[in-house]
Length: 445
Image 1 (cartoon, rainbow, N blue to C red):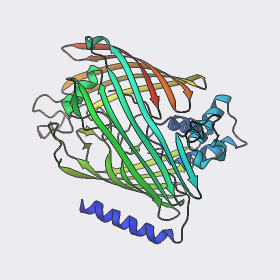
Image 2: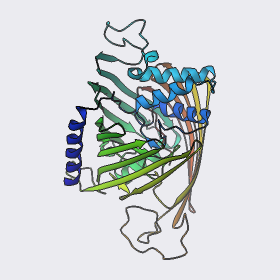
Image 3: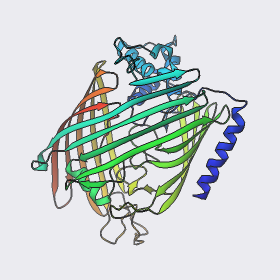
Image 4: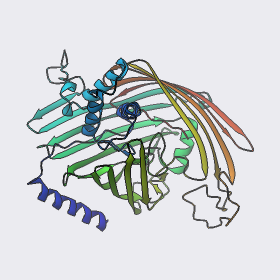
């Protein structure tokens, strides 16, 4: 803890010294899972080259950087885009309208003259180099699972988020949510066996097999120099391209951290210093034992079509959940995702997953549990999937319709089978959900 305090004190002192001579408009980040990530990744594929403005393996992305990245490509004479792509670009500009003049589209009918003055923000105010934006958060979902025997899976999330900039120098973001949920059986089994909600963490039992939890996060961000950016607060980070990460993902709970991002030309070097929670048991509210994470990631664009990343870190888990892949360790996985937009407001996403992993055989450490304290691991002859072998096959179709900006209607269907030498468990699930300013989550494990 003393180390974290010293780092924070240094960052604040350095910032105060630099603000007198260095002025730069300050952006906050897109929440992980936001629709902007899909659009940005597609833009990179269409352009066919890396860019020094945005190193896409290090997430989250700065809103200002995404807008600059999109505008540079949209107005490039070497690229042409379909109408659906141009609408996606327009979505980015509206969603981060503090950084795009074309995105600041006034609403035709503001509510009570004060709310939704522009199409993207419930409440917004700006003056000089400062602004404040507040939006509600909502996720309501009802589902049906054949194995549930009359108990309806559901998600009920309400909350709010804000982002702001003070004098063009300091970016601020915060959110909170109140949640109750009853998940499909395979998710519930994991929640109550590990005493942690995926992507969230701490919870209390709710109506026998449901969960009740509170989510909150926030941070400040500021430049120290032209090339060095600092973020500190409570949130998450993700390192890697695509859906999964074997380095650092968003599967665990939020954690307090300081992140120092240095970017010079084709080089981006990120340092993350975080405080994590050790493995624990029980649902109590008492203090949990702490541990610390020091993660370092160097991203280098060696060529306009080739990037290399180097990663170093200590610690493997946080709040009873793995920091990286949901399957933790001793696994192999095949995952494919296809997205199709038949209409600019409608997106279809189909996901196929096949995974093989091995659990420990009692006290024998087969490498199937990052929390095990047993040292009984064979010195040779080991292989992926050893121990109690599990195979998972999952197919998921999500149809998402967006009638208004950041208001989503999701129809989700999936089939999941889990095989062992002794039994096969199969389940079908269908759900309908409403999301307002919230990202959808995939429980693919």
